Length: 397
Ligand code: PLP
Ligand code: TYF
Image (cartoon, rainbow, N blue to C red; front, side, top):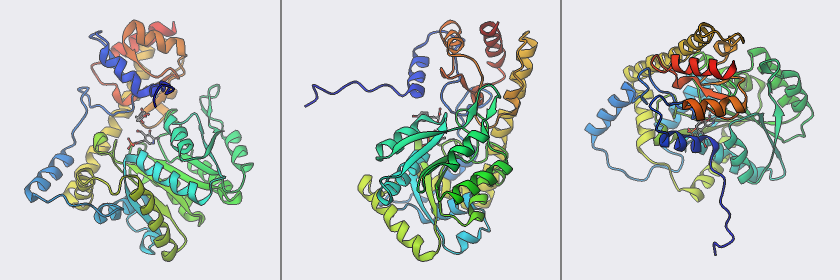
C-alpha cells in the first residue's frame, strides 16, 4: 500500500525549530517560528489565562460535546471582538461565527465551504504569504495563485501592481488578505490603500477572505479592525478567520474562529448550517478548554481589562525591540540603513538579508531565521539582542 508513498517536504518554518532544538550552540537564538516570547525568552502564560483557568477549575465543569459551532458565549465574544462591540451587522444577525481549531482551522472551514459554493474559483494569496495559505486552499481543491505584494527594492508594498492584479481578476476569485501584521513581510496596507482594495473587490465581484491572526499586535484591538470595518461599509459579504494563538498566547490550545458576513438573518442561518456541515464531517465539534478560557476572559470585565493590558505589553515590547535592533545595528557599525525594521508592524520583519546571509547566521552563529530573510522580532529580548545585532553586522559586512 505504501511502497510508492513519497517523503513529503518538511514545513520549512516548523522544521527549522527542530533544527534549532538540536543545535548545541549555547548562544543560539530562534527567530524562525512566529511565536511571541517575553523579555526572559519564555513563552508567556498570560495572567488573564491563569485566572480564567482558576475560575474554570473551581467550577469543575463536566466535558460534554460542544455544539458543532462551538461555545455560544465564545462565538458571541468573537463577533464583538472582530466586528466591534456596537456592530450593526452583528446586531442585525448578519454574522455567522463558528469556533475553529486556531486560525488555521478557520481558514480551512472557510476554504471548504467556498469550494462547495464555487469549485471553479481561483484563489489569490499575497506574494509572499504565510505558506500554509497556499496549502490550505490548494488542498480544499482550488487553484492558488498570487497577487503582487512585497517590493524588495522599495522595501514596502508594490501597491499599484497589487491593485492591477485585483482589477483584472475574474469575478468570484477569492482574495486572501492579511487584515494586519502581514506575515512574513511586516508591511501593512494604509487605511487609504484598504479603501482602494475594498473598491476593487466590490467592482470585480471578488470574494475577500481576511486572515486576522494578529489582532491587537499592530496598533491595538480596535485599530487593527480597520480592514474589517471597511469591508463592512462596502456592503459586500466576506470571510474573516481569527486566532487567539498569539493574542492569548494559547498556541497549543488551537483557539480560533471563522466569521462570515452575510446579507441578512435568513442567509446567515443558511450559511451557518453549511459551515456546521463542514465541521461535522471533519471533526464533529471543537474542543472545550481553549474556547472556554477565551470566552471566560472576553466575557469577564476584569479579565478582559487584564488581557488588554497584557496584549498591549506584548505589542509595546515588540516595538521596543524594533527600535532597539535598528539602533544596535547602527552602533555595531553597520552602514546599511535598517530603519525600516522600526516601521514594519507585527511579529515579523522581512530583514532584506539574503539567503546566504541567513544561512551564515544560522550555521556560524546559531541565529535562526527563515531563508527568505524573515526574522521574528517578537523573539528578540534584552539578553539576545546584542548578540543578534553583532552577528547580523558580521554577515552584512
Ligand atoms: N494566518 C497567519 C497569517 C499566521 O501567521 C498564522 C500563524 O500561525 C495563522 C494564520 C495560523 O494561526 P493558528 O496557529 O491559530 O492556526
Ligand atoms: O509563520 C509562522 O511562523 C507562524 C507559525 O505551518 C506557523 O505562523 C508556521 C508554520 C506553520 C504553522 C504555524
